[in-house]
Structure formats: structure tokens, C-alpha cells
Length: 167
Ligand SMILES: [Fe+2]
Ligand SMILES: [Fe+2]
Picture 1: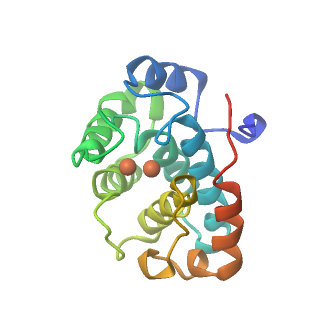
Picture 2: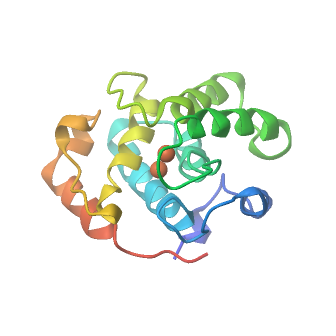
């Protein structure tokens, strides 16, 4: 389940719009089950990294929402960032600083970058910790934060990466 009682940033209206515009399989490898796991990964990491949880939650549900295919789609992060800009006044309500963090995290999430603001790094690690869904055990070399590199965190995320979340 999605831990609905805990969700503050992900409103029903936001999910409705994302779903209406999403062109891939809602329950596919880049769909809502992945986003729910990324959210939980990110919130777990944020307990230790001190990342901005508003940005972490929104990143989880937006970063892959504008993918046009399940393979190579190098601009999907940029499109997600543009989407975030477009709906900020009506659905996200982030201030400029938080919106900058979210759009930076979305734009560059699939470029393999390791350095950056701790909130951005936490978003990227939350995504990379879910690679088990495609049979890849996350490699600490490609993770940004010391928290995500911990053996027990990688194992926790890896085991959960095969769980389906239905909303
Ligand atoms: Fe992505
Ligand atoms: Fe992703």
C-alpha cells in the first residue's frame, strides 16, 4: 500500500493529473509502483540525510511521469521538470528554492551524477535504490549519500524493490 495517511505532498488531484497524462503502463517498471517505492526509499534516507521531504516526495511521483518509452528516453527528466514548473501554482505550491531543487533533481536524475545538494542526492539515491525491480542490485559506487551506501539500506531496498504497490 501507499501509506496514504502519511502522504502530504501527493494529493489526489496531483495523482489524477499525472495518471491522465501518463502514456506508459501505470504498473510498469517506470510507473506508480516504482514511484511509491522511491518515495519510501527517499523518506527513509531523509531521516538520516536531513533532505527536504517535500521535494523528495514530489520527485518520487514526478521524475519518471513524462517518460515516453521504457527504454532510452534521455529527456524524460527535463520534461518532468517542465511539468513541475507548469503545475507548481495549482498543485505543488513549492517556494522558488524548493522548486529549483525538485526541477534540478528531475532534470538530471538519469545522468549518473553523484555530487549535489543533499536533497537532490537523496532523490537520486531513492531512485537508484529501486534497481532491483529490473534485476540489478544497487552498487554503492553509483550512490551519492553515505546513508544509501550502507549495506543494510541497500539490502532493505533491494528486497522491497520487487513488491508491487497498487493505489
Ligand atoms: Fe528516470
Ligand atoms: Fe525512476
